[in-house]
Length: 624
Image 1: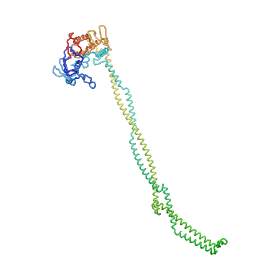
Image 2: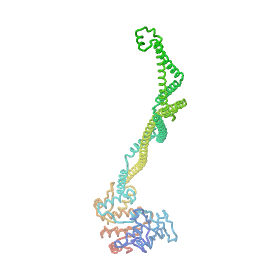
Image 3: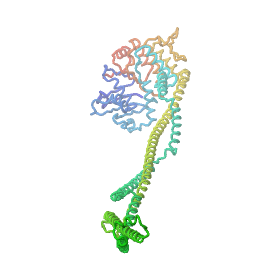
């Protein structure tokens, strides 16, 4: 394949720019910042496309780097190439990756860019292979030591894998770094912590399922409410009884009673007074007794008078009577004495009867007065009658019933007080149980919260364990990759490596002008340059020679990798900066003689054109 023409509508600094290429050597000359790298990138992007990055990478990717400063002309272009006797026009719109078409100008129709077609058109090269073979730059390392390392890596990669995109040293370092990072991500204690957590979870679940943590708060609160309601009911009943007792005591005290015994004593006393009154009244009311007393009084007087008269008759005067009694025989005066005694008895009896009648009258009046006071106090009437006495007794019975009711109420109050104390104790016990239950529920909530945290940690640890398993698998894969690379490194002279060394050795002889006839690589990837007299380690050669070796290897790789009779154009991007004029002259003469396909050479120096003209080497000059 060869390039015929490119046209840039908009790409980087270029707008509406066209460049034509010819067979053989095409030298594109431009000063620094003239846009040589932009043209180089445009050719590659037209052949392989341009992938647009996302996120932070989008700020520094190729798409953003070469986005036109002025989008009026679009972000697009076309490239005409010749391959297999046909001329193809490749058109791409980088702003929209889907706008990619290939026109076969030879037959005048569009060609579908299938993978097999693009593989044939690009000589079997991927973009990576193109960058590492066909598109040739100088060695990137600034120091000789760095250049040796890069050259060894390039050789090792090609010898062991045939893939220039793979850097064995960097890959090994990357794998080691990956392994170290993965080992850092591993959580060795995860399995033990997970097992411990599962044990804690099982223990907590068993503990939580214990009957001790059953929730009885509502039940106890209901019982407490019932006890409180019963307490209030009994308290109200007690208050009512206390009011009744107070009223009863007030009634009893207002009537000067203390208890039923005092009422009974008062009733008995009143009854006795009434009986005394009735008895005295009955005695005072007997006329025969008064008449008998009067008769006896009269009889006594009469008898006394008769006795005196009889004595006078006998003695004729008073004075002799006494002497007669003293000096004379009493029998003579016996009748008179008897009459006198009878008179004395009658008088005395009548006087006694009259005295008793007075006493009875006095007792009756006294008892009547007392009864009047009693009846007046309790009945409101001073009448002393049997009816009043019956009413009084009825009143006393009522006081007795009241006193009995008070005593009964006091007993009930005592019982209620005992019941209230029991209910109060019950409420206190229920309050303690409720508090205990609430504490248990609080502990249960804490345990449930801890259980949830443990389960969350267990789930997280399961994820960690799964991640550990994944990391372990990746570590095994890294170990396997390391072993594979080690095995590949030890088989340096097998298959592709042998052909690469052979091709590179032939090219080194020509590119160095016979200074070095070939190169060899030992099993430790140490590179030696062969002279006619000795083997020279690559570390001892100059930077320019290393660059020549690098160029020879890339040309050899390009020759071996490309499929079919056609070859891609060789692209050199300031590849000869480290060459002196003699080396450059030898390299250009050898290159144009050894490579008969299209060559595109970007340079910022004019010595290439001067040497080419001086040696009459044909080339096509393009100035930008």
